Image (cartoon, rainbow, N blue to C red; front, side):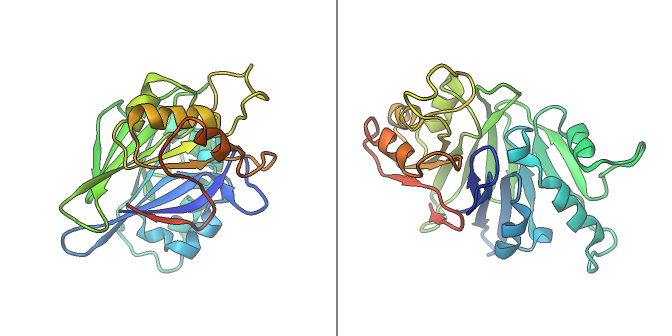
Length: 264
């Protein structure tokens, strides 16, 4: 299983990266590569095309419906609907998200009354803790603590080094400390955790985002093997979240950058 960071800016695209978007890839026993996109936030459809033909995406998994995590599904819809080499009878792309995803995507694009996206996108509503299978990848949504319905996603799949061994990527989406966050982190080979807030600056605002310290505490409690910090707003010093996390987490810590590839 491979993680490719497409976009990692927090809350809006930054000068060097799009908003949240992560490509997860895994090969099945026959050698076929499966592609799952975790979130497709503002500005992400552009750099995503450097990494994969969007027509080869097998599923899109949305953690929640804030624009920095789903706005560029509109661009993906345009690509799938109007590209010149579209083949008649192509199967629609599965999109998984919270309740209301279908209507939100339609509103975001501005569909006319009675118009639907169903020829290009098939929207499925997450059911908490009910896994979905996409090729060799198993995705389990876990409710987390954010002002709108939101899920972290545990992705299990074959190890890049040993296809007989299963590894786990745990993606927090946006959340504050909660039971769901601890469940995501427990036993993860990699915890991909947002860390938009700073200790001492944002202490009065709870129920929205993690700080680097809170992300590190979750990784430590859960015994996560490694921590990758992401969703860093442009106004934050880029390494401050890692400094905070290092005070409480004893494992390896990395800060996400656009184009980063992590093999699990």
